[in-house]
Length: 317
Image 1 (cartoon, rainbow, N blue to C red):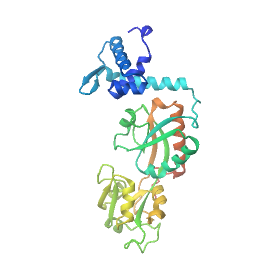
Image 2: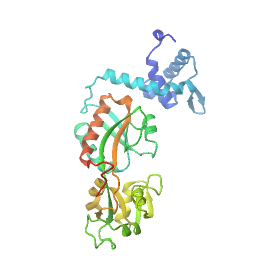
Image 3: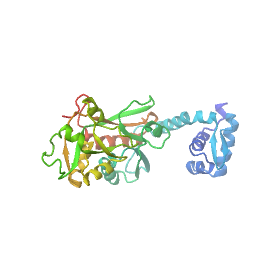
Image 4: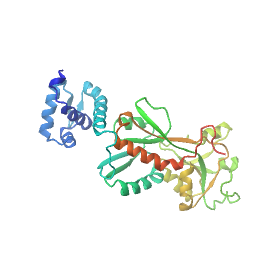
């Protein structure tokens, strides 16, 4: 193909077509008419010597060649936009932009209220969407543009994913105030291991698995706990605890924030539990995007007070 004769505007149309699989939806995305997008697809097919998209029912599916173009093309367009925008051209007071944040409902309690207040006051045109965190699919979500940021426990990620530390969090045991089997303990005390293992537990487990935080620590001393229930959201965990004689392990910042509000007492677990390091990850193609960078800075600023400065070796006392 002779690049000299190729209309680079067609690349935006191709990106929209590959993202939507529809000439009508692609037209809405790039601000053209449906016939204009169909004509652009014809020019792309001729220039690239490939059908690119093939009709399958009401949708169009990408050919193998078109699939191979999807990610490099998205990166090229993002980098071009960041290059032309310049490093300091994001004005939150005037911006009309939306962000998606993929995270557990921990962030619905600990981040979103503060972020909402800040955006209303300083960035009224900014829309923030908190979307479900799909277990074991964080990278895929970002790579498919279903979310621009993910807030997750630190793990190994591919080279094209950028990462930023947010905070370390230890875990604490929560029980309802007046729990009949814990009345003899002062709040903040360590629950004896026999009692801890005998009491019924609610687990935070997005996929419904019985293995969860705390089990490895108990296994190390040859003990197990009695699991009664699992919940896919933290809200379900602390609500169930507040209305029953079950107990649970929660991230310390969340437990402290909810204790007085819903009537919880906090106790230390009988064995040290490794803390969690929470990080923010995103696709490296957005590293220099000024709007994206601005949002990352706000999230870092709002969550940094939660940082307990722990390490995996220190755990909790």
